[in-house]
Image (cartoon, rainbow, N blue to C red):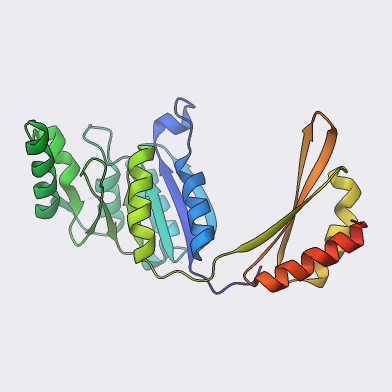
Length: 246
């Protein structure tokens, strides 16, 4: 699919994801949001809570550091515990250090005051932000995410992550949302591969995919046409349906 949209990558950080202890859903949610708002997601990675792995991944993915993509979104590792090392790793990748951000401290203090809690040193860790970073709002628990370079760092807790995404994405310059149409055929994937390949060659500006499934009725395949021009997508789908005799 041809596109001039900004390119993006997602980096998920956490031992609990790699161990299977926690089911990852943040990347799936963000992928849907990016597609709907005009960003071309090109890569997802999952790395452990390991400083060097995180630094290497950020440098490989953030174009402002010579990486591959216009934007990088991360999930996980900015909490109050010793293994929340994302802020330090992001700072190292961007050649800076971490400090207690005054604005973040004020936000956390206000939340603690409302809840009758003390702003302990552990809670204050969530105000640590790389020097030069700007905050990403957290309407759920006040502890902010942050952006530096083209890296946007968000929490791993799904409710908090989604709130940060809702705040951040409208503030970024997107492109054209992806349009798609799907047709279900009660045939195996191999039975429609030839027709799909022929249509793909006729519409090189679009993306065409086949996704097999099995249910109580047997095998079937969902055929999906994706592109930036809704009329072009619809025309290609009508041609595909005609080719399949639907």
